Length: 222
Length: 292
Image (cartoon, rainbow over all chains, first blue to last red):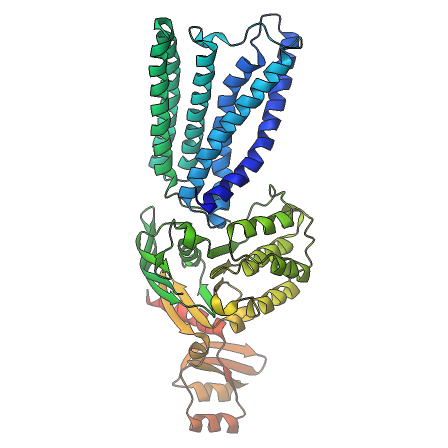
């Protein structure tokens, strides 16, 4: 890791945990309020949080590109280093929010807000571990999509629109992947890992597209 | 260390912004980048700073490609006043700290000394400062970066007259000046001409000239005196500008004076003074415009 990459990543990982705590704090309040006012059974904070984390990672990736690209160039950081740093930060943030949500769920398990079941029912054939892996990996895909869509705003009309469109296609594929995983899950756990492999391949594909889009983006400044 | 811009062109959405730019900039000099609105000054600067990729040609520092090269990019510092500052809640001290993280030559002590001279409260958030104070912070970050290539794009906008004067004197006394290429892009030519060692004039996306300031200003002179006498004296000369001040007429003329002409001017009580860069600039950019 070059010094620049290290320093840029350090800056991000000093900022994002603060933002993440704000997000998780708000999410926790929403969860507790939902728990109080809902008569139907609710999932644990973990199930609740893991689904929301993907959206958070998506929004955070968009904000990161829009807020920090000009700053990075102004600090003499190349787009390539900035991109690498964003991807490392995405991974670290995904681990961070998963861990924090997990710790809070553990603490809540001793309270009336433990939830009626651990996970939401969208992936009913998956084990808890597979569920965790799925949401964690799909969070990374959301991050890559966020980077791609935000970077597309810097490009010309067609490049930008195509990038956004390909982002939407990925979300559709993800939904398809959920169904596929359910199907694989009903067949047996080994086949589930084929679904994960497909998802990881999708992350690599979209990370590569994001890099292609970001690598020559012009910076309009002032 | 030389900043070389060779056969560089920039096209944005099929519109040609810059064509065939060839420049060579060396350390120890302050370059004045002049051009009318839309001439391509900021586009050229954004190419040097890697904010954009050249469509054709190359930009190198010390023979190394500038674009997307971390090692080179940290030595190029592009300073401008941001338009939107409302969300910049970081304290001035944080600006100084992050400058020193990413730029190996950044001199923090020098930065704090400059901020004190500019009378900036370093504990304040950037967004809480006035426009002029923000400009002073931008200027400080540039000067203290000690970057090999330091580019100031209209940074004096918003500064009051005393702050501008202070900035000018700090540019002249900038730390490690002999090892730095300083580029000042400005519209306030009359105030800043004494800073420039060399002038680069851009017009309609092309380099009109790159010349040492003194050589450029030796290319003409101004004649002031009673209107009738001035008219007689400048008849058949290349007059590029005529101004009136009451009964006085001031002509700006391109060319040099012979000793005989100087004697005549003295006999006719005409004042001969050096050419003003601003007048030269207006004339050169206007003439081109007329031709096209």
